[in-house]
Length: 192
Image 1 (tube, one colour):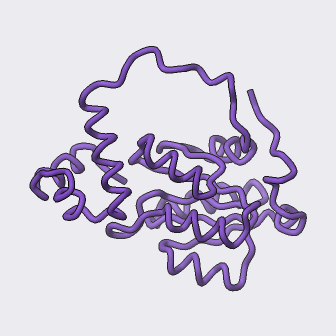
Image 2 (tube, helix red, strand yellow):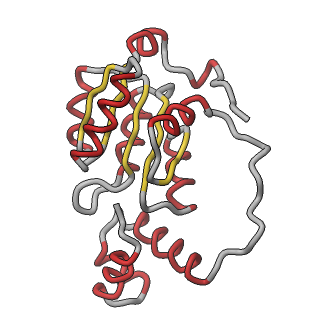
């Protein structure tokens, strides 16, 4: 079921007319791929790889759309970028991409102004569809099985990483585990 964007959530006419899209991604290859793919679809694409880069671009540009990676350089969080983008233009359609998906970050991303949250790998079709799905969908099927202990542990770890702005040492301290233990758990999940 596809939801049409409501008038309140649609970028202003100027932003829609120029189809300006901001890609916030620190993986240069993925950023280029997304930029080329959206460019072929008629978007004018600008990109940044950090919160500072986003702030600089917003001084001169007003994108109507944004694709933001959740985890940026080092321990930076894309959630700060979502918050900055939403503050600049509450009608901007923002999709968060992550290889580090959790309920905690999905909830925070939506609270901070994202219209959708997608787990990697996601393609251009998925992202464009997410731009159109700005309202909830009551037809989403509920999970049929309960979460495993490993899933619950991962959710708790990720919740703590978000709370500490992805500071691994502080998250490990709050979780009561050694930093190297947490780092090994994160490596096993191949965080991107």
